[in-house]
Image 1 (tube, rainbow, N blue to C red):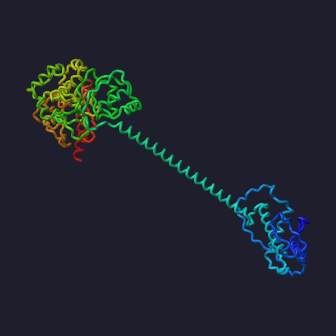
Image 2 (image 1 turned 90 degrees about the vertical axis):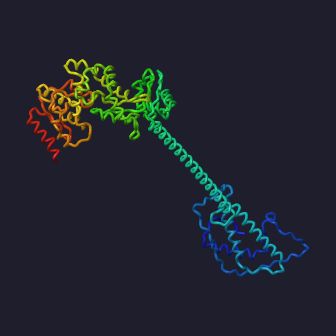
Image 3 (image 1 turned 180 degrees about the horizontal axis):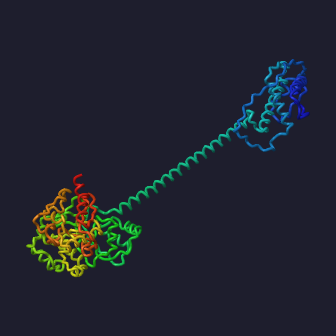
Length: 552
């Protein structure tokens, strides 16, 4: 055993001290006493087995001692050292002594030292065995007491490795839990995005579909009653229930968004092909107190149309979205009715002021009712006939002229003269100012004893007015035509209107512009009217705006 003399020594004296100790141990084997038998098991033997023999010391030749070199494992920087309480750590001196004892015992075991005693000395051998067992026990106790080091192959390394594996497993479990939680959150987010996007898409298409007409091809109107005090929600429910619109709720919010308000009660003729804006506009205008037959379609009569053109127009349903949609009326039935003396007499009786100056059939007039059918849009119903459609047009003309009957009488004019002059103004001018100037020029010519000199009346007499003609045909008319409609040879307003004039043209005739013009000509390409006071100016304008452009 090495006495605990000091805790500090140099590396140079360490080898000498070890050698000295080994020599002393070899010389004093017989006198050396081992630790108390209680510390380890010692084989028991009887005194009678073999007499105690005297051990004689002998000289032992030792080989030069080499300092053992320990190959320590490389430290793992990432490995965490397990925590050991300080109270289990040995004192510095004890640690040094234990380390020294461990080195000595390892050196003794590693060297091949010849036996010091003969084979006949079992006691010495037993003592040697006991010493080895003692050293092994000391080594095991040292390993238990010492703090496990990262550089020693001790059982504590297994514990550290086990803890490290546990920590790794925990970290892996945590990572797995984090990954699982992240996947769950991602799935939830994706589902929320899909739900929100799907809801928005559905809502957009729902509103878009609700705004469109229920059936764009169905123009069949129904008589719908809107009670007094109905809200937009209630009106929407009524319209949806009557199959006029797709969705009442969409109608409610649409009218609020578009600021439609003050809907009026009454009976309305509404069709599935109407848009929400059209229906809302009608509801603001107001309905009728009693149901009116629903319309099947519409007939459009443009301004300036002749009777033959109107006859074609009554066959076309302008209120349908279908191309070339037809009405139940024919062109032949229309022309037959407007020339029927019985029907004409019936109309004269129904509207005396309008037809007070109606020309007679033997006056040279082409059609008696020409110009008396007011240009507008007319509805027709299931009960409509050709006669009822024509009468609606005559009634509209009477309604428009009613405010002007007194004015016409005050100007010493007749309705037929006003309509005849207005029909020419309708074709000669394109805007209200030109209409008033054209009407003033016509009055100036008549007051000067001149003829009106209009090409339109000759084209009408030839049956070409309203038909597609070339510029050359329009310019090179027969001014010597034998017809009461030849206003180059006949003075006055002519026998009657040549088309259906608009209210603007009628107003222009009743309130003409005061000017000094006697002539006017329209540019054959642009329609712009140029006025002249002298014939020379007129001839220059005709050459510039008509002849030159026709020849080019």
